[in-house]
Length: 298
Image (cartoon, rainbow, N blue to C red; front, side, top):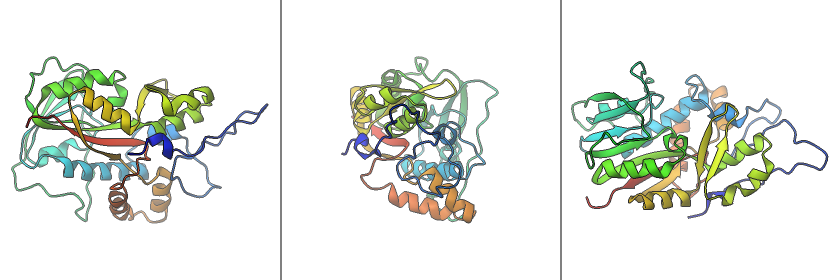
């Protein structure tokens, strides 16, 4: 596997006596009209705006990826991804009984995005499962017995938002049955480097690719943890899990998606098809990394 830092684009260096210009460095693969305004990295990825062309594309891709990952037979799934995650209803529709941890009783789930041309596998003839909403802190799973879930979903960057990722991964491994699987999505070092450059954190940026732990501040004051492929593999191994695969959540850049859909609002399905083909290779350049792991012994 190639380290994700090897794929990062050259970093802009400020000239002596001058501050870096206001234009945000483009992420790898970004395209579009250079004369048009460039949205900041934080503006693109800080919140999943459901009306944005990119986020409609993002969640459509995520839905297909999760549908392909779900266990074939109905089982018990723990969902740690939070109410913004749009894949939970899909798991219920496929016949699984899902226990979703929510921050408050008033929290509601976002509506799932659907595709009209059938990218996602259809439910396999099973009756719909049930969704059990539980108000709890996803950082500590001490109230859950060991070895009771067939799968754990930690999507929507939840492991990047829990800065002591090792603790939560150990808990995920504990509650999984032998042979159970987990799906996780985290911020990549590529995203972290773009955020550091955008905020003129040049000394921190120079150490980012080789940092053992990369914590990145966002303009809103939040902090997330960013990972390389090798770090994900190491964390999973230390937690007693075996990594099955890792790939970018999306390869197509936000500016490319918005440019294409700006010209043709009906291009969503074609973009999803293109994305699913592109993300099957060995290229790990992407702002978010998606990984699947299994607990040995099943």
